Image (tube, rainbow, N blue to C red; front, side, top):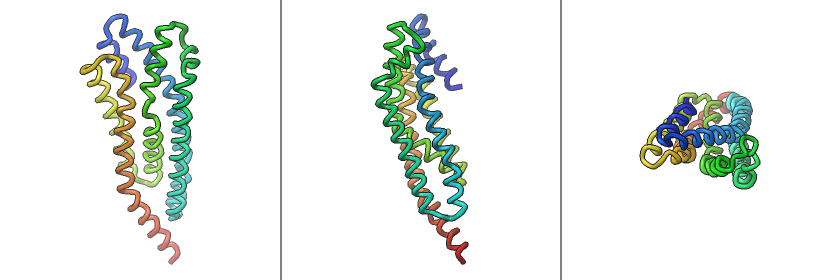
Amino acid sequence: ILLIVLNTVLQRYGGPGEGDILVTCATIVQSYLLLITMPMSGITLGSQPVVSFNYGKGDAERIKKAILCITGLCVTFCILMTIVTWTVSPVYVQLFTEDPVILSRSVTYIKRFTFMIIPLAVQYPLVDETTALGHVKRALFCSAFRKLIYFSCLILLPMLVSAEAAFLSEPAADVIAATMTTVLFLKTFPGIVRETEAMEKAKEK
């Protein structure tokens, strides 16, 4: 749905000709973003059983260690992808087009669109591991909040600035949502740790 909205916004505010170029670039940009988000989803979703197992076992220390390792792995991956983006992303775009205008603009938009993927690297594990800890409603709220920010920026930025400003909606959503998720996680995680420790003590008795 968000991709349809993005294309609609670009066509509307870009106008004839320019809108088509922006939609073409957006297709390439969204494809590139999947190179980042799909591996991260694999890392965070694949690690959920580790967190869930230790939560059921009542091992708070292992939960802390697992979440730190998962988050660290995602951040490291996104730092690497940031370097890739700013160095070899033109090679990726060339797989789609040889048009110099679309190539140049797509590379620019990719850099803009993925500018805040390091905060996103915090958002993904905290949301997915919160789910693994049994707090599904909180995880859903954080995920929905990010989509709401993205959708709002996607509608408002092109309206207030220009069609190209639509490519700023992703980094805006990434940094705002990651901040919100981190604050909520830091606020609630100590309670989860106490709950886990209490479970462990109860089993010892």
